[in-house]
Image (tube, rainbow, N blue to C red; front, top):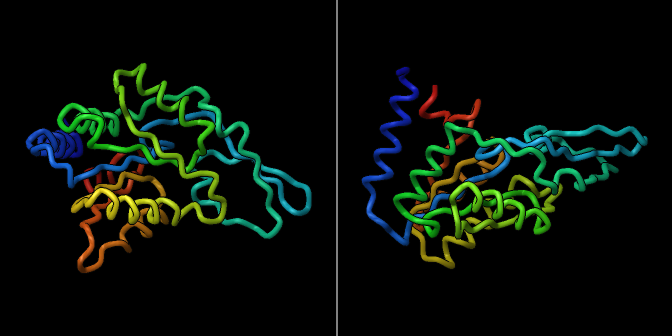
Length: 199
């Protein structure tokens, strides 16, 4: 067993040792964190040229003046494939804390919510909360941190773990760590793994 797998096993063991605490929540991104799908976002530039972006490309795309976005394909859950390394963590949280211990917060919109819930229900994860943040366009990287800030206040959370592959989203969530606020523990996903456990 390599060192990254040993660190993953140790991290999962810590999750199972945790007592159920309503003040702790784990927020998982979906695309390129829990699942990989084949849906793409079509971007049409001001000059009429267009390009299709994968979810990962879209999360880091630098918008140009006049860009128009077509999410019709992206909002379909096309050929979803689980990312096994991350799903082991998701499974551990679900098994030890139940569905109330986690949320899937996605940049997709309400049209995809039922598809995502059905996918996870069929995979044995019933009762999962799915929170669609989209469409967010130029606010993609701050939408999740703003939602997390509201959720901390609403549910009186003291600790929130964020799992996301977008560097900019992680930076925005890390900025929430201020005196008097909940502890926001950010886990950046790199090459389908939590960077701190893999590097």
